[in-house]
Image (cartoon, rainbow, N blue to C red; front, side, top):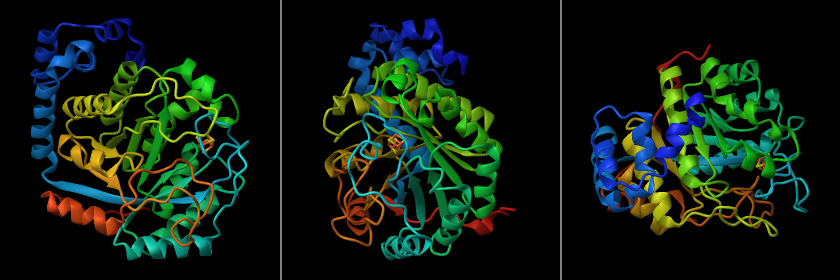
Length: 366
Ligand code: SF4
């Protein structure tokens, strides 16, 4: 983890020599230095070669499979005031936490889409979304789904362990930004202000025995090259330390933020593709998801470059699957296709949509 702040690696991010990038691209066992070089400006003229290698590795490791999952928002109540977020406490939106019956109703809709992999999502509201609440929600989810992951505020290892015992298999926890100064600027209020507690959450989840760990950064908050370097190193570290777990990463970028928030370092489509292909080449075995923040066209275009999973039919507000015109979403989505439409598009492009990639009967959760 100390590597994240290595001055040598950071200086390699400024490399302008394309030959050094080519050498890094073709080195069999990639080192952190190779990651930095592939993210440097010297890679600009090597992008097509990196993309070809990303394609080759994707075919070799994952074939044509794309896992589909659905997020289920449990609560939009939040004590945080993160500048970029539609749930932040000072915004006037209708707030609610789903009851267990409402969760079941939402799950029925998700299940009717055919999706069997569910991600339970919540704002930071420990009073409303307690460990006991999560345990019940996980059990309800497993009545219709085969696997359930969580994207919730960081908690203690014992709480993750209780959630694993209830049947949860994964934790998604994006650091948002690995740049601590940028982090402090946007997370100035509430428990999310604790950078290290958040950074170490995936380790606590690994220690608790969760078998799917997903890291990520919210691109747009800080310099993308450095962010990409740190995210890649974090994922490589997680792979080594929690070798029994599947490590994945997410590459969401800021879009559709609340009024009065200007994205500090917006990134364009080309940059996002650059990040995606470098991550695939540096981390051949990690899962990579692409967010519904992106348009259907963009998501389709990057499929072969390293993407292994995508959300489909997503609603980003509690109650969004069962009720029309619910207000209070966390961010606006750009891909509104139903899961069936996503699957049809995948099939027409030669991909194989995977609705279920795990079953609890594979292992004991006790
Ligand atoms: S990012 Fe998370 S903690 Fe921050 S306001 Fe949004 S839901 Fe709350």
